[in-house]
Length: 309
Image (cartoon, rainbow, N blue to C red):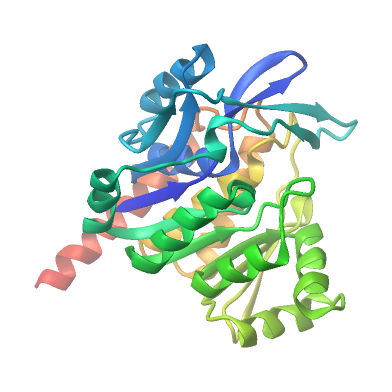
């Protein structure tokens, strides 16, 4: 099982301490922890933080062949402030390495030769023209089963054109409540209620699945015909940095190994609740989560053997 993720690789500075992050990077790291062959496409600077990022990415189990080292731009940083509820607010540094993800023709051809089970990306890394050009070329030419778009709007780093272009290629869309409101207004010029927004966006784009996360209220999943309401899990929140990214990874993992939408949503809810109860975006999993991952993988192997008979 192989997944390629594209986007920012940066350091979140929380109360003066650096923590590696970037939404697509967190997603890719969780996929690697779940046993997926997870490849990350990004860029870091030729500096201390860049070297540290590569070491950690490798330690997390990521395939780092396509993380480029930029000779001029610094590794990205984000100042993160946690409010009283543990929810993050961001100040994102500009003109950094991940704004210029550049592949040689050889590296690009290597990517295009491979077959991927999924390609994952977001909106923030599209803030530079060169990144958008590379991203849309890959979306047009990659061989992959699913295209997972986590909208992940940050500050003012998004544009209607980028979002529409992204949606035209996507099969799975993930967004939160605030982003659903923003997209409804951007795409349709009005704020729909959820039950009207979902069919409206499906009628405009060729989506197969939409996941709406609602924090402690759980999530709502839609496949064009049916709604699946996934209950939230009550926890004591440590911080929510990376919780949404872990939801994305867990949902995609379960879905790719054969879980149905409701089962995948429940597993995603379990993982994201656990991550929010811990410090850091990619904590060590509990024994219960590791066992659940093992069960998913064993079932996938069992199904493969049945198909070969």
